[in-house]
Length: 435
Ligand code: HEC
Ligand code: HEC
Image (tube, rainbow, N blue to C red):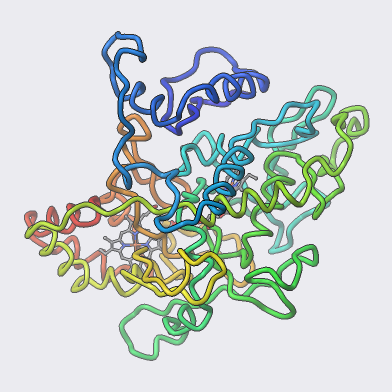
């Protein structure tokens, strides 16, 4: 199995790698890349001139033009935690360090390259059978890679399948800090106002391993806000499950290895590392890193973009892509009582048959998706060699294509967009693409 295009340490994607990169490759590259300031490597990647990097590099890119920048206003201690967490986020695991027995990729950063939007090669495949997570068949996700001696999973026949492109991880601390009541205020489950838009909260039950003191945890149903269907309420759950499911790394929260239940060669294929393979500290460091990741700053407003912003509202894009939500109290002061300009309501909407995966997730049904935040688009292409992959599975290659694929509750907004003059459409797109 190929890893497809290999993300560089700074997140930009290197040209198609030839042959079949091995697992150790990434670990080696990560160690080597650690000698360089990633900002420096980033500039090198941009400079196509056949010069040595050493000749080119003097300054870092300006703040706000990368996906891996810390929030403004962090204290020195917090910045130290940010650095520690970044190291963990980028850590590429080898087999002797616990990778596998089955897995999808070797580090958080290998899928969330540069902390921005992912690429199709890193798409996860989730599945269920008649709404059940199909654990006995290897659900809820296919691990299509395995260490020597173990067998990767294969998709069983007759199951509901959902392909999910990695979303960006910048801004998740701000998303976490938005209060439940702020999110609930935008629900309109029965479409009481008759505008055809009826978003609702995905209520979910956090797993028992999430301590009740964590944000988004505690007894009873909680407001889901992470994942493509807002099917996860707690950042700790998202992190622990990513280690366990995506990388085959056990932690003090989930200490039993994930294995292929349909394979009879699992035992000799277990990695040699003692469980848990990472402690609570590493999990916490990664969470703190993501919490403190700043969204890139939006571009300047111009008269044309002002016109685009107005059209964005009149076409009702802004009814789901709500420009700004406010956070509540937070122990990291840089996250507390702030307006978050994310262009999302964080609730789920039916976007029609065309985008449906027909696979329920928590309280969300097979037609519903979380309104994707519209931030960081201004610089997204720069990180992907000029390409862009939008919507839950990356099928749209431009903002315009993503809009034309909206249906269901967003059919009215799509039709309003299509009915605009070419000039108006261009203004709206300029506004969105500059966020
Ligand atoms: C194999 C690729 C892959 C790996 C490895 C991976 N992720 Fe993800 N991540 C995804 C995908 C795909 C999603 C969306 C999942 C969904 O909606 O079901 C996601 C979602 C997330 C989210 C939610 C973001 C949002 O906007 O809701 C966070 C946070 C996250 N991952 C953190 C991590 C961390 C931390 C690690 C490492 C411990 C990690 N991921 C490893 C692919 C990956
Ligand atoms: C009814 C709610 C709703 C309305 C109205 C709506 N959207 Fe969306 N939008 C969504 C949802 C939900 C998604 C995520 C769909 C998916 O993941 O497949 C999305 C995704 C997107 C994306 C892709 C972002 C990414 O990172 O993948 C863009 C761009 C976008 N919308 C722009 C617009 C514009 C412009 C308008 C107005 C013409 C609009 N939307 C109207 C709900 C809406």
